[in-house]
Length: 293
Image (tube, rainbow, N blue to C red):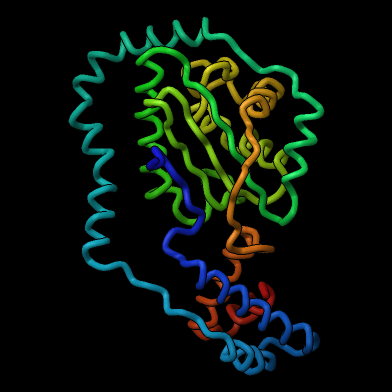
């Protein structure tokens, strides 16, 4: 089943490159710790020697065809918005009434978590610095909510490709991967994600930094905490929101972690070290390079 929307922390980087860059950092760190008192200029030849022992696969440059396809996809949203703007302008009063009527009457379903279920879900977490998360739920009844979700996820998928493709989903930089997938003729939605840290910290990160995005993504789900104008409220009702998520979380039966022990911060730092090393830093850049190892 194809995902309706997905987010990748560092698109275009292969698993091999991530592992090679981790090995590069290990080699540089070992050298630095072996010579802790050396100045950056004196340490540089030793770092270069250590780095030369690590094989680094060249980064691929997008082909002309791939660049054209990406540019065409970039234009798809603004062009569609321009083409549909007269129709949306005429329909907006009706759509607003339909949305507000539902927002003020839809029930909130956020039961208190079961201690036994929490123990069961916690038992499959924190075996590494990266954790997994899976949740499934039904959309609110009616075509309005269903097609509103289709449009929102299409925009999220566009944004994750062209706006949030460099290590951050809005202000959250701990997510390795996330996807939203429709099930049962778009009546249910499956959300899966891999992220750094604990489940509680993951939820708090989103609530504190991008609550409006949570509301856009999930407020069409049956039982979601009440929103206003689609983006206000909802996840800001912290207790109801966390109970709602817990109610819909399911055990992740199978998942694959290709980079055990590596957080998104580690991968970003290792990539920066590789780029800096290839540019042969000097002066202040060399000092920053050594400090980041």
